[in-house]
Length: 144
Image (cartoon, rainbow, N blue to C red):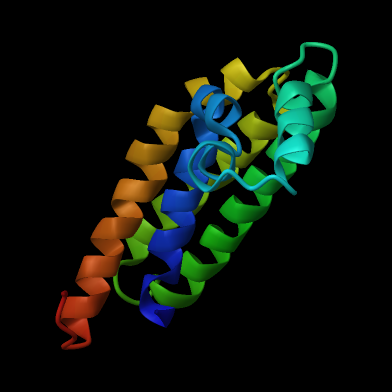
């Protein structure tokens, strides 16, 4: 599990960039599948607030904070694990990740965050996957 942490953070963060789906599908597993009567009122209320224009700024700031925190963790893991494997690619990922952090912090809407998802995927997630594969091969570890 330890070895896949950088990739796991990338995939979780990439999911957060899809803000429209995040807001639309929030709590659906609990609401639609589990039919949890104890949680339903709270989740419906939170989902209603999350999708309310009046409440958007409140949720946007929290959403941005989570994305920035995850990118920070990705940078830390890439610099700790992959710089020795492929210095140029790791440095490029770190540089691009920092740029994305800045752009996320400047976003003024969920739609602006969603527009950054293709950049995150191409400049962070896919290179981190390549670094992961290269790291595993260089350490004689098999990919499952």
